[in-house]
Image (tube, rainbow over all chains, first blue to last red):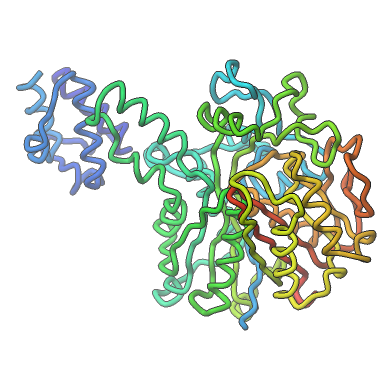
Length: 77
Length: 421
């Protein structure tokens, strides 16, 4: 697994308190990992902080799964 | 009018996390004061406070992980964490857990705070200034809002009745218990989880109270001697932190389920000083009217009061309250015991009234008045026994607990053995 995916996974584990095993590529933050809408806002902020990027609001809305996050960050970073 | 009794107790104080742990240490004359460890306070006028002891949860220490999941605790300011811990203790102690929708809708929460998420606001203001609005957490507002203790408790337990929060500075805890009791009396709820929570030991909190000349500053060499209500050498209050929460219940409701009943809320009185933003009126008029209103509501004669848990902050205002209590009790003054437990735990601001109401209830249960520590050289002579430096074993059937707050807001609660009134 890529370094980016590992770092994203670590953030998700920290913020949502879920088992690492549940974080599969297609896992939805809200439907599968127990996040609410505020958690997703905070997750996006944590990604921005970790990778030194800016994720605009319209892009953030499309980041719904772990795979979406890794893909967006890989392209932006 | 429906009668209201207390069926559950919970607290987090600078002496311990837990009601019995705190009570035992209070009666033993221990103090929760010490140098501030939470942040570097060396540049402030006051460098000591009464901090809640942190630890792994054993021996009365407070372990946040025992009360909220780490991922949830991260989203709340400390006052909410303390409030949750006290509320969970109180609910467990009461044994009340509604099993149907009707019972849930008849169970409410009213836990207030004097200032709420002061640290969260201060830290976020710095973050905003240094790094801009995009770094402000989505949890900032719900971590700092005062009514979010009540909100969090209701969400945890599914209590769907009245959800409310009192904000009356240092009278908050007493007002919350009194107002919640009224909701039960009026039939808005059958059970209310009520109290106060506060976490003011932060750089901005200490600096702010230093600026209004409210805090003790001259006992850095001996913090445990700093809170000394009624003593001639007192020089301001010592900041505390924590939470106190009770479960209030309609009397027949409590009896029907065989609940353990600690005490009855016999009376509740309120008044406003209409005098000054931080100082009480010098004639003690506001305090006296608050106490009189509570006595009248209880249908008692003031001389029947055995124990008074004073507001007694270790400031110049102590003797104003004392004189007002003497006037209230009249001939009964020489038979009453009054103590300030702030001598041991400091001033818990919005939590103080709730924690002190619980101490009053325990004084009734165990027939013992907790001591006023550090009372070595009384500033004034009084016929009232102030329980200096040692707990006082005595008959206690009826107790009065006073709380007075900035802005001139006063609240008095009268608690008694069931059928004492």
